[in-house]
Each structure stands twice: as C-alpha cells, then as structure tokens.
Image (cartoon, rainbow, N blue to C red; front, top):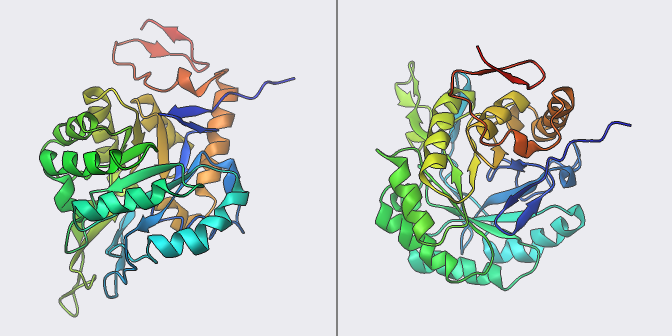
Length: 320
C-alpha cells in the first residue's frame, strides 16, 4: 500500500494540511468557488482585503488583460470588517480550513482597530497585512515602501492581536530585503512575497488608459520569474517563514517557490482562468512527491542546489 506523502507545513502556530493557499482578492470571501471544489482540501484561504468601513473601490474599467497576465485596479472594494464578521465568516466555519483575514487601513489607527476587532472573534486564524496595494489613493503601497512605516504598521497590528501576523510586501521598492528585515524585527510571524508590480495599458484608438485608475497591479505568469527571485532574496534575508506568490499556475511553478525556500505558496490570478487551479496544484504536488519517492514536502522546501551537483530523475543526488 502506497503511503501518501506528508504535505503539511507550519507558519508560526498555524498548521496547514498542505502548502497551497488561496490568495487574497482572488477567492472572494471564501465560499464563491465551492461549486468547483471543496476548499477544505486547501492549506488555507485568505479572504478579500477588509477595511474598517465598506469601500466601493475604483471606478470601472478596473481590469485589463495583458500578455501572460492581467492588470487590476480594483481599489480594495469590500464590504467592511463588521459585515464580513456578521455575514461571511459564519459561512466559512463548515469548511474546516484555516481562514486568514487580509486587512487594509488608511493610517496606523485603522490597522490597529482592525486587528483588535479580529482578535475579538473566533474563526479567523491569522492576519495578513496589506501594505502593498498599488492602486489606492491613500495608504496602500505607501506603507510598504519605507522600512520605518512598514515596521510601524506591523508593530501596531502585532501588539493588538495574539494571532499570527503575516505581512504582504510590495515588489515596487529598491531593496525588498530592507523592508522584510524591518517587519520581521517589528513582530511579523511570516512574510508574503510578493504583491503585484505597477503597470499600465493604453487603448491605441481612444488614446486613453485601459484602466480608469490609469495604473494598476500586474499579476499572472508574466511576473513569476521576478517574484521567484524576490522570494529567494527575502528567504535569505529573514528567519521567519516566507509565503511565495506571483504567477503560480501549476504544481511546477509552486515547486520552484518551495525549492528556493518558501514555506507555502499562494495561488491568485490562475483562479480567474481556471477556478480549480489551487486544488490541481495540491494534487500535482502530491503526485510529484509520489513519483519522486519524496515522503515529506520538507524534503523539497529550501533545497535549492547551487553546488554544481545534479539530481537524478528519482531525486538521488549525484556528482556531475
């Protein structure tokens, strides 16, 4: 009888049955894709970004397709933390999967208040701080481009909750490792790397931007090599777990992020193309481990080989 591989991972006190997480902003409030697969089979779900008050987001058009990806300028439209707790959170309890709340504030006090309200309820297992959204007028990426402000937000959230605090970093900085070290020192449990890259698209007939916001966040396979590099750099810079994301479409992509040291991965834009993408990645990781006779996903995590040696097809290291 074949023993299934152990895909479980830990992020601080969080225990995930596998390293595949539904990314914020791409999985709704956690129940929208239940007609396609059982979300309880995922490692965790990160719900759509939540603010203190409901936000309408940016005016349309706010999504534009690009080669190998898409631009979005949604502007963090959401129902607000209280409506989420009252109306959406009870629907997540039967799913039996860790729920992570992504939060967004315009100032430090709003971040602190959001974390206090989350601390007071059951059913939310961790907080992911959004300090990296590139398409809102106030706050957003501004907090994530300076190490001092990034640390200040992290500190405010961490001191107002006992739940694990994950900080989502922007790639739109000169040195992401400086920000990563700052949020680690300020109390982050883990880091999500990375959010979208700034981009834009123009209609050549009307001469107008394709997005009403003019600029948006670029996601999808187009950014994957850059995201992988930045995850690699962040992993080397900090001691806390790193969750990798950016253009992951299938299990091979996920393996690349795990090999460079990510403890888990998030699947986002791929779900718009294929709603089953996340669960197919879980299955792909399991099948890969079985075929390579890998008993635990930890035999892959952080196993980037730069020594000049190679691996055989079945994972046996051999000298060139």
